[in-house]
Length: 402
Image 1 (cartoon, rainbow, N blue to C red):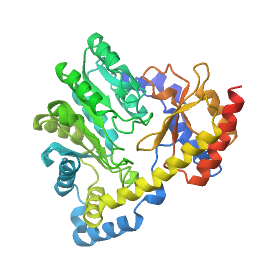
Image 2: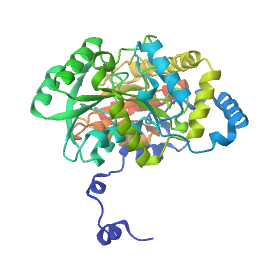
Image 3: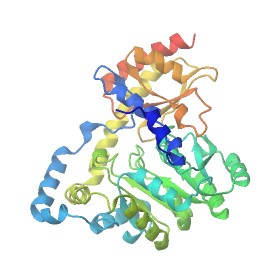
Image 4: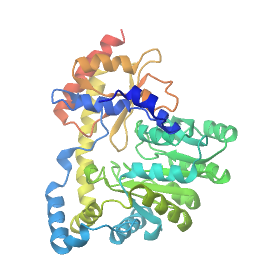
């Protein structure tokens, strides 16, 4: 096998290839695949909650009733009955009127970031991001050769003064935000912040990608308002079945503010992969027809809330007081902050020796200049492992913070 460096020397790579970097989190996940590791690292749903039997029944039904068509190519836009379901749910849950022809079915919501970025960003363009933000978005925009304009987060959303300053000093036409149970911090934007941010973007003609993979996992019950409520002409909404049904199906969606932009997104997707899996679309739709989705999500929320409570209790008992942690209202993550002079990466080196993994948050920052924060995932660990793992991590913290 030829050496990678030798290949780079012999063949000229595209400029964007030099910006493609290995995800630190992906490397951690390889390590945590070991059975002897207690992992709070991945942003993964609990596999015990996957509706395996219902998915099997849905698969049998669609193959039995329409197998030849299900296994054939399909249209790029996506399966219309599935898009109608999504449209109706937006109306019922958020009061949003989003017609099915403004919805594109995609291979996981990550694809939407790539497609919208290709649609709106030229190399060297600025994209406004939360600081920190989802590492997958940073990777995608980086490969598209965008420049990052990071805006600091407060407990209820973006720092408005910092946003105004960044918008004034950096021309941009695109922003990317995760307003509900944010990854990695777990914070949720207040309604006031949503309105203020929408007005700033609207007055500066900056479009917003609202990524909402966790919004349904709301422990209080009510769903939060969308930027599309205040800024419908400039908001792309991203949603996913990964956190509420199955990530392995690789199915999500993106809505477009208007049909012209949707037509362009469809062309972008045709060039990428023709269409999302016809089989996955039909199985998910059949599952939704046969299942009470609200009840299914309520069960997820019940389990995750118990796991969150177990982690919060264990943290209170075991972490030094100078370590600050959040208590999210939903989603899958707790955010941790060490005293400024300490490194979460160094803490990880200690904890992994104790066979406990978490994510040092350095890679979540646009310019990777903060190393005293970390993310804990509570959704993919049972309560016994949470108690044991947090006890071990607490001992590591006490040793490290001496």
